[in-house]
Every structure is written in C-alpha cells, then in structure tokens.
Image (cartoon, rainbow, N blue to C red; front, side, top):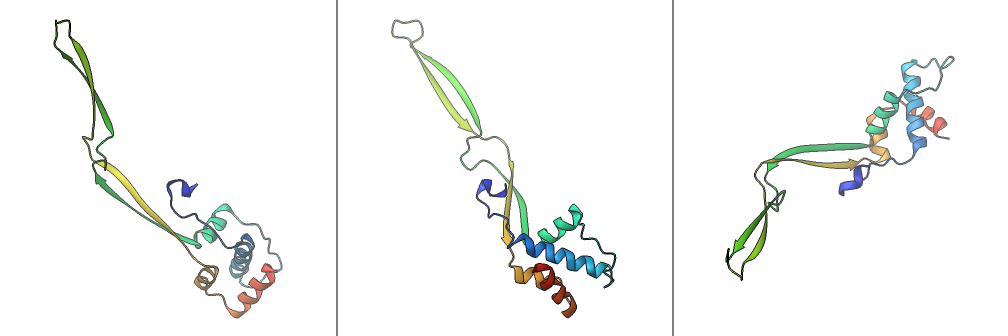
Length: 134
C-alpha cells in the first residue's frame, strides 16, 4: 500500500467510471462498429485507464543519515585495571559512515473531470460514456 510512509493514497472516483471509459475506448478502437464488440479488458488496458487518475513523481538524493545513527559501535573500557576498584564502562556510539540513497515521491490525484478531458471524447463518445455509466 502506497500510504505506508505517509504519502497520499491513490484513489479513483468510482470503478464504474473506469469501466465506462474502457468501453468507450473499445468502441473507438472498433471505429464505431460495435456489432461484434466484446467488453473484455486486459490488465494493461485497465492499468492505463487507472493511471490517468494520478501522477506519481519521484527523485533520489544521496546523503548521510539525518541522525547519524545507522551503525552502532560498542566499546568496553576498563577503569582502575588490576585494583580492587576495577570497573568496566560500556560506551555505545552511533554513527553513519556512508552516503545513503533516499527516495522522495509524491502522488497527486486527478479529478474525474480532468481524466475525462484527457480522452478528448467526441459528442458520440460522450453519449456512449453516459450510456455505459448508466
């Protein structure tokens, strides 16, 4: 799930709109001859329609850990060695000794109106869209 790191969730307005869009696209491919048209959609066709509902932008940067704490070093120090007051101190230090690759990204959801406008439907295709949506 994309929201596990606090990004926005990818969402669509309604699955019925996606199915109606896919049906209109299928009609467009059949050049209006829908007499033998089957409304079976491939995973690729569905993915292409869903992907119009959002944009995902990402980039990488390289730097040390913000807290300089990705590695740990434990060191034991003996004080007053060989005396009856001898004691051991354990010192734990955290540090970072390499550049890490950081992924930055954002998801922007688009409205149904924006998605529909991107298809440039003809008047006839709008009628088909409304019919399939109903």
